[in-house]
Length: 101
Image (cartoon, rainbow, N blue to C red; front, side, top):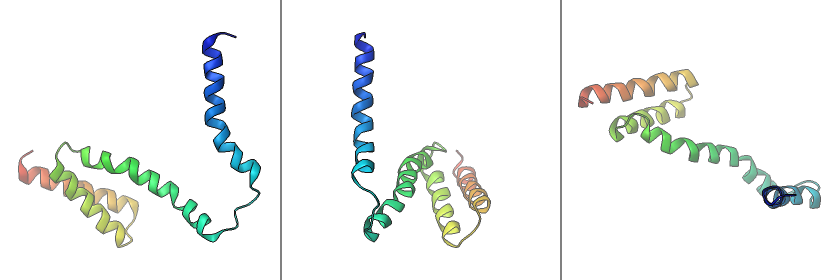
């Protein structure tokens, strides 16, 4: 084997082993706290990945913040995803038009 193949094999083992080892050692998670904690991880990761993009989307922090605030408020009141998207887009557009951006 050449050096690149060996390096790739080592990287596969190093990244796969920590993920597979808990599955091999533990049968089923019994703790309600751990299960609750693990159920929120996808939402936290999605929020961490999305939040910086929201503030950079319009190129202006004020219009992006207005869109974010309107989106949070409309989502809080249980509106549909389409309603949240349209309202936040319109809020960002209005702020951009008022500020002359």
